[in-house]
Length: 352
Ligand SMILES: *Cc1c(COP(=O)(O)O)cnc(C)c1O
Image 1 (cartoon, helix red, strand yellow):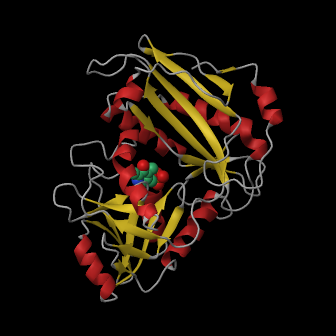
Image 2 (tube, rainbow, N blue to C red):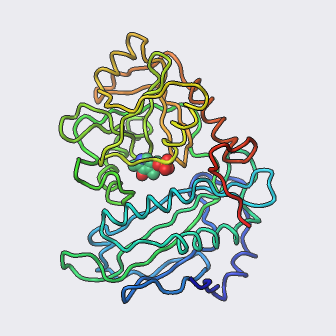
Image 3 (tube, rainbow, N blue to C red):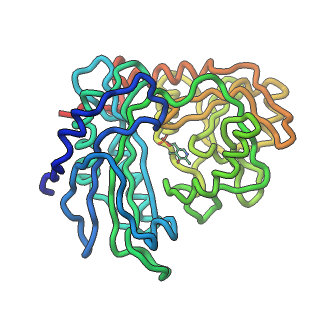
């Protein structure tokens, strides 16, 4: 694939940009973005542009039918001259699987990397260098064709936007068990990183926030009995000193952080189990102290300790410990991501 174009406004946009003191997560937009169009059955040459509004047909399938998938990954530059990407090829493969599930065109690996590397390179001077900080990259693909016919678009756009970010969460929040609504069912699109999954989960997430919790914990759609995951994070429990996480099915998003923690935990000598976890059994194991700790994981927060699980009636189940195993795993993973520790798994790659 040929190289991409650089729009005339890019150098000025980069020059104008000043990294604010307070970054939050997603509050600060990187000054450039990447865009490439798929039409007439093929990918067109991509462009690096100043960050700004985009034109979308009001009748586009992305807006009308949620024909949109995305990815999330981070570039780190902590005490290093050049940025490095964490497991970016795995994000590319997951985006392919999401595209297949929604029958959208695949973003070839060359184009995926062209997009994330163009943005990362341009932003390299202001990728925050404090431990835990990074450049969060958000590649996404959406259907641009207008019309209500029930089929996929014939034209698409692949974009990459980015945000310099702090680490996502601090403290140990509580999580609301969602007993009635459903995020994803078997046979649906729960395993694809699709915007529509978030649409299904936002009401419960908002309600959880209003009740003073951070996010909802989802149960399986058929029986409301087995734990799936949080709205944007996978779930772990420490039971009898061993790690347990729901086994993947087509209703659970296969997190790259989840996979990294499973690998890392085994490497550190933990016994790990991927299995069906019954919510009511887990709650009684929290009560009888067999389950000692809970945490969630995802690219944004890396590893987020969970202080308690709350029922709809606010009865709370509080494990004896918070952020013990979680903090060990977070520290070990972050050290690899920031290239402060050896990377025995070949997960990080420095940009040339
Ligand atoms: C992105 C996402 C995760 C976490 O995946 P990572 O690859 O670890 O960032 C978990 N659950 C959902 C629903 C997600 O969208």
